[in-house]
Image (cartoon, rainbow, N blue to C red; front, side, top):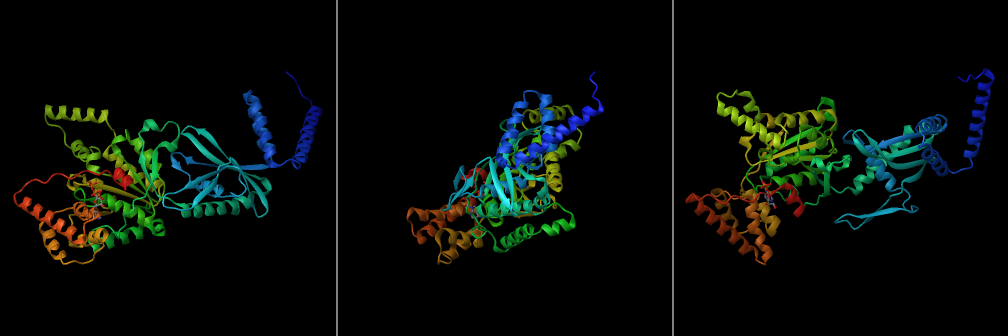
Length: 486
Ligand SMILES: Nc1ncnc2c1ncn2[C@@H]1O[C@H](COP(=O)(O)OP(=O)(O)OP(=O)(O)O)[C@@H](O)[C@H]1O
């Protein structure tokens, strides 16, 4: 064992102090990025010797006069809004001097947006120079990108006090200015790999539907628009009453009555993103929770055709009643096996996720269920409080027809309107079908012949209804394909 005497300690102490003094003096003559590069070089060399590396890291942290603040892209499965705001802020910083830029031209926009792509960016705030760097880190939850801010210790109060607030505010302003709404669809878990950004695929959302062009009873429409606007302005209200800032809408009605169109109109009204959640590709409740946590604020989460997505409806009832005979037992076993093979997302899993997650971590989220068969749904799923507003979209009545006529033919009144009014009272025709007939205008037909064409179709439908012919079932539109095709 080597013993070190009191004199030796004094010697070591003064040597370290001397070295620190020399380093601190030298530092003044080197630009900061050179110092960083040097630190990285030292660490890379030391990496070969894990113990020495740990010691080196500790020494650098201990003696370095700089403070490092990290902003990871995700915490757990939730995205970090500070990261997104910083990304936007830094992307727009000194673009005139940057060496590496990325150009983006959004559809329908004439402005090319140039943003920085360098991994090291400096900034200046109230005369203080600051350094930003970006990188990747691996955590037990998967890979995450991050931004790191480095600043001299003496400027810490300025940075934490006002600079960071300034960066986040500026970043958010840039994001709002450049905001392109996105339509997300969930990837199967086999795609997720190690990176949380792979949970959802996104495309730019460009469906032009608005509440103005949505054909439905104007009073009902006004009620829905008011409700949505009240929700989006309700931050203080929800905080005051201690409720999660979320709202659920159940849209029900026959195919082709405008459920998907209304979702687009909602997104366009509030400037929210849409998450189209396909339940059938989700294997477990845990996966479902990860996906929901991975959604961002100011978004609409849509579960379309909830009655067909999974066996959500019967679970509770089946569990309650004990099977009386052997056949029931066999049926139950078969059902369980089927569930095992496909998806294990259960009604209770869905309900827990909806209620639990947002009360814990979500803000400003709308959830929409659509169905063609409201009567098939478990009451627990759609009770008020969970689905706050139940909206029925029904067959085309005269008020709705007038909106479609305005949309497609640009006419407010016409002598044929009266006949159409009478026929619409007698026949159930969906707005989708009416719209289809009015679209014949595109085949160079005039308004008069378009309306006559519609009257003919209505009269034909009336005759069919009388002879009790079962109408052909209309095409199913998945919201994703519908929104993408527009
Ligand atoms: N109420 C409506 N107002 C305006 N257009 C409508 C309305 N309903 C349907 N349409 C038109 O019909 C087409 C299909 O409508 P949409 O997909 O919104 O119906 P849906 O109720 O969601 O049908 P599904 O249940 O099959 O998904 C759209 O292209 C839309 O333009």
